[in-house]
Length: 223
Image (cartoon, rainbow, N blue to C red; front, side, top):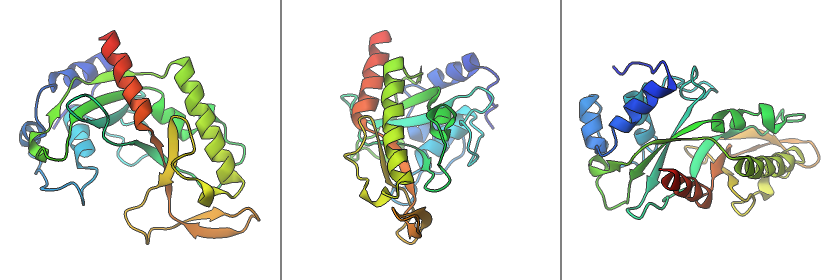
């Protein structure tokens, strides 16, 4: 059992020590079975890294390392270092959002400080053979924070005005709102533009690949 990190320094030391290992190596060390496919176990890589690094927030609405205020995000990339998919941040509330502000929002709390773990994850590579690249800690610059805030405001305003069904992936400069559900039967309540409740698919906030690509490039320049 991995110890819960007591400091940012200790977390980063552990994180950087796994660079170069395959997911199969880490799974074997921590006695975790590697699935044949991620189709039914989409969150498996994230759960493995949580176990390896001592994250313990579980499903609570907190950063993965609550005492350190750090969120853990795995980032699947190709061998040229380009992100392969958008990054899920958190589920978006579709009701009770009147009066919410960015500064105290759940999503800002999640993105306040992020430990990114890039993993070479092209589909032709078996899961066990996918390689962990060097993890790094990230905090949004003033410009990045403003972009995130603007997108959050636009998307949240649309939800509040009963326009959640109009939102698609083209909205948002760096962040988008998309359906987030295990299957089409999972429904949650929202309100239409007349204020009447209806059932719809849950939605999640996702960081666009162009944004995570920039985060990666900035880190490489610093490194």
